[in-house]
Length: 103
Image (tube, rainbow, N blue to C red):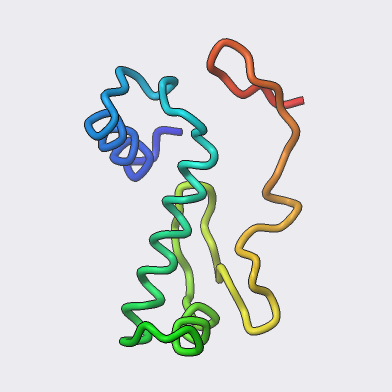
């Protein structure tokens, strides 16, 4: 992925963890999930202006469009859906030579 956001995260990862190339990122999908969730949560806390769970949940349910690493969340959460990802966001793949190969 050559999006500027992705390149920025890869660059920061390399600096923080001494990776030489993007393929050296341990658990790249997990890293991207964690990045997106952390930013969605931070936006929600900022929007709520508080750190109690009911306020954060309400702000998460009202968070609009967010261009994440994995996809554009529009919205990530709703009052009735608290999972930012659904089955359409997943695919089967194998891992060979540092690459994910879709099946």
